[in-house]
Length: 89
Image (cartoon, rainbow, N blue to C red):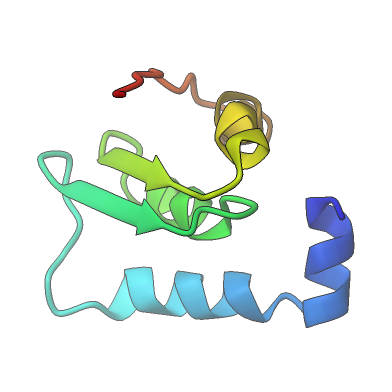
């Protein structure tokens, strides 16, 4: 499944939820914040965070190596930003 299909099937609820949470959190996300996006999936939550604060540092984790490999392109396509990729083993 690709992310446009996922968005259509879920009615965009993940995006709506993530957008609302990033705007209303009592702990503001700033350029000096570090965020863990566990279960990255299609990157919807990371995308919404990057739209609020483009300079935030996000560590993504997912059981699917394919999802992790797609991170740089998804962020570039949807946020217009270059993802600084780092791997730890």
